[in-house]
Image (spheres, rainbow, N blue to C red):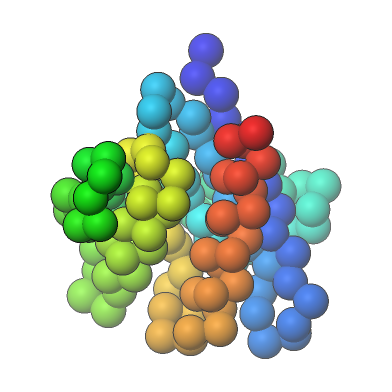
Length: 132
């Protein structure tokens, strides 16, 4: 069975929404889906049912061992106003040394840097717990 878990990324800033993060663990890979959610933490398992996988979706490979170059990456699907997932997937792949499939469904928050930083920080913390 392929393990999948949904995490709740809380926000203590009223201008930054809480996020739902679904993590699917595959051999040497993570499939990550993230979206703002209005659901409470106890209900976050339902969040992926109302989100969109193909809003901004990318795949990134980690760089080869011993190099500082960026690994290969590609956009799988993106809207005309968002290409955030490719750069974030590259950073996550470099950080964890695994292939990252990243889908971000943030719609109206796409240009808000503080929201993107909070999301990436939440993703990092959640994936770190799986790496232990």
